[in-house]
Figure (cartoon, rainbow, N blue to C red):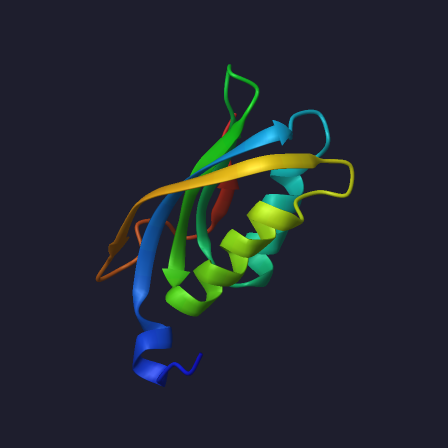
Length: 103
């Protein structure tokens, strides 16, 4: 799949929710670290339903990489059943300055 640079640099925002054994396994900490490593901004938090949710923002190619990571890797002790991504949209500028863990 070839992608021109302009398309790879397009900023997008996407909400995510991860299902499985994702609480109490440092999932948020690893998600924050991976997001920062990729230069993404956004947030991650646990939900009362036992899932982890948040939002990713950044260049489309990096967001795609992070989505794959959330879907297939996560933290070492996590077990991901599925990942839902929704509300994806192109954005003009980032809404956040870094990647935060929300309590």
